[in-house]
Figure 1 (tube, rainbow, N blue to C red):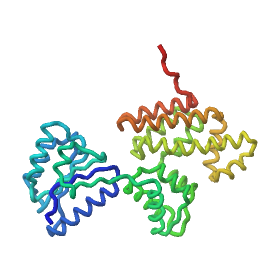
Figure 2 (cartoon, rainbow, N blue to C red):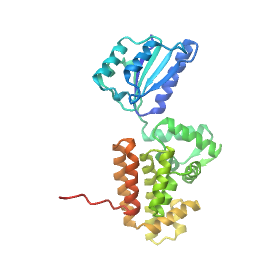
Figure 3 (cartoon, helix red, strand yellow):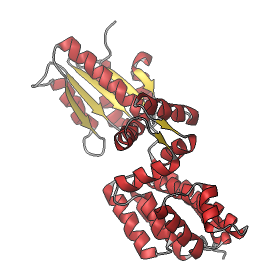
Figure 4 (cartoon, one colour):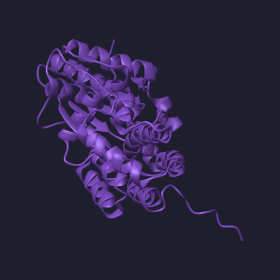
Length: 331
């Protein structure tokens, strides 16, 4: 069977998609007797016409060239689609074009031009598969992990096997073989592995320090460590624990009893939650959880470049307004 000269690779599971591309590159290297030249382009910087011309010209440095065109769902203009369809009708034999997108659909004319055998959709794993994937991966490295620790880890990493694999590898290096990883261990790992993170951000919010919260948020965003949705998920997890602690405090449990009941063992975490108990009422914490749900939906609905502004607004309504958003305007 002739190897396809163009593939359509769709879907949000970038880990499995990357593994497929690596496998394809290895097959081409084996067939050609040398590694192919690999180039990556994006619609916002390189028009499809330039990519088609590059594919037609062949490579000066290798017997075969792989061209990966990311965000292929952005190919929409009539002239762009026409250029691509002309190429797909008669592709270069010394090149392989990969049309890649985290979306699950592209222009119907493009999708129709790629054979079904060369079209693959990499769907995100179901939650139960993600949990078993992490547990199995760590077990192969000689570690065990509790279900609650798995849930926390999933809240703090992107939901694809590539980023999950990276964090699991870091965890195995951090703890070494024979360790059973609990929630407090994941907290310690996140806290010590990055200068600023969702835990230090929670510390500032618990202190009700708006300026310090803003500075920490900006530091996290500049470092590129995590998306807005990830940060909100990490704060949700911690605010749920803080609300549970506030409820236990209202039931007249002593602080040490609260920490024991909720499994808050580290002195740093206890100091942070104690500050939150002091600075926020039960009603305010309930309002903040509603606020988090609202901003989670908003972050998922906007472009990535608008997320920092939304996160700063969230901090204002969380820290300064204590969970109270403005009333809707009525004329």
